[in-house]
Length: 313
Image (cartoon, rainbow, N blue to C red):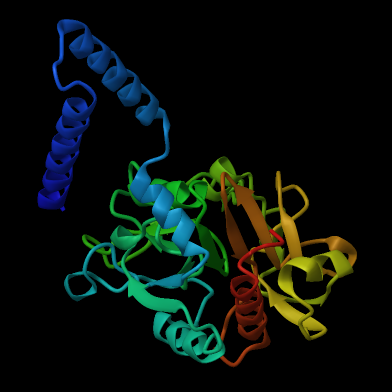
C-alpha cells in the first residue's frame, strides 16, 4: 500500500509539472506565486473533503453486498481463546451456512468470517453472533467497541444478537468474558450502566427484581406482532405468535425503529437504532437454535434489508 501511495504521489507531481509547463511555457515569478496559491487552496479544500478510499467503500457497500460474520477473535482465531457466547447458541459457522443458503438469489455478494480487527467501511453489514459478548482488545479503553462505533457512524450496519456490548472478552489474554462496565444497584448489575446505553441511548429489558429477588427472568416467552409501518422496514414476513425475549429494546431508548413488537408495545424484540450514517440492528431474542423461530425471523429481516439495499431505513 505504501508503494502504491508513493507511485500515486509521483504521478500527481509529474502531472502538475506538465500542466504548469503547458499553461506557462515561459514562466515568470508571478506565475510561480499564482501556482503556489492555487496549490495551497487545493490542499485546504481537499482536507475538508471525504477520504477518497472511505468514500469509495461507502459507495460500493450498498451495491456489492459484503457481509462480515465475527469469528470471535481479535486478530487470529488460531492464536486466541474461544470467545464466550451469552444467550446466543447460533455459532458463526451456522450463520455463515444459513446466509449463503438464504441469500443465494443475491448475485453480487461476499460473506466472510472476520476478526474484529478486519472490520472496515467496505462491509455492508457486520454480524456479532456472540449475544451479550463481543471480542475486545483493550478492556480498559474499549478500543474495539469504539472501532465498531465508528464503523456504524460512517454508514455501517452492525447486527447484534441476544443483547449488545454488555460483556467484553479479551480473547488474546483471557479465557473468560467480563462486564464491560461493572456497576451494581442493590447488588444487581445495572443494564443502564453499559456501553450500549452510554453510546447509543439504548435501554433494554432484563430480569425483574423485587427486594433483591428475581420475580421475572429472561429469556421469557412473549406475544409479538407487527404494524403496517414496521413491515415497510422488515418486509411482510410471516412471524409466529410468540418468541423468547431477551434484552429487547424498550420505549425508553432515545431513538429506534421497531421491526417486531411485543403485544402492548412493552418492548421491541427486533429494532434498528440510527447512529450517524448507519444503524445497529438489535435482536432482543434468545437465539437458542438455528432452527428456532427467533433465528428464522432475524434471517428473513436481514434478507429483506439486503435485497432492498436498506432503502426504507
